[in-house]
Length: 447
Image (tube, rainbow, N blue to C red):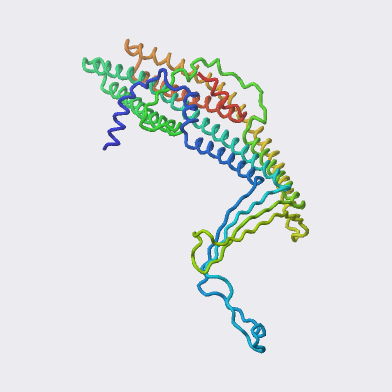
């Protein structure tokens, strides 16, 4: 019941959809750039990639570790020594070595001097950051695309509601006039019924449009990252009423504007670096290591007392590692990298061809949408003129009720066709701009 009450209350406020100094398409997209959850996660991925770069840089810095250990020898190990040491040849003497409590502590340092894989690995993680940045851009474009489609859909439905509201009011006045004529014996009951049926159809269509408007507006809020219970008013200037502004697209396409293409190029760079990393595995590595430690042995746990003996130890050295034979594993990894590079190059070629096919198709759709919207506007103007003339003639008794109903039905159908084609036009333009990789620039130029 609460949901029904909310719907009734919302519909009651939609008798005329309010447009004004509200959100433009650009403002909706800017809002989403701050509050949309997917974009927040994409920005976090970039920060994670930066930390991976810092992590890789840290592998060439000194690695210092401290360690400590304590052992309580509950039972000391016993060793048998020959009896000759105590003048009892032919016998064995059990001797216990060690102390009950042993403590050791130390610090070790390891420093890479030469590692051929370091520079390649650093470039690889930087490529990962480039990939994260492009994925963030892709998410931004996908979000902007979804917002654009829903934004224009909501506006078109709102315009349709206002037009249907005006038509409904005119139909209601005509119904009241016909009922008055019927009461005065100047019209038939069937005339009243016909006009009432037409009025009910328009009113039902108006209610359905109002519901669609609420749903579309909620979808837009969700895509923006706006709470669904927030108030959102859209700008009335976002829909062009002057159809001459829609022109055939100018060919200014650059394949580098497409994020999908750039991501494929980045993947290729990653495979090439992987190949170099595997090849560098044939080279030797050199590192420096040093250690310092102290140890103490006690029969009583008195390490905290002063005066006890501690025995230091230290050392320094270098480690050279020369790979000789690994069972041809590295050769297999290099071969895999080469094949991945071949696959990546082929994917880039396929992506480029797919983008060009999409561009050609969307250019055709946009040109077709421009032609259709002009035709539908002419039809709408003609249907509106016929509808008004028939209404006037009916008031003067020069035409029948059937003529009025047919004219009204044709006018309503022309309205629906016009707004459907108008939405198709905007969607076609959005698809074209997205295919060209210029959707964000297009949005930034909108009112």
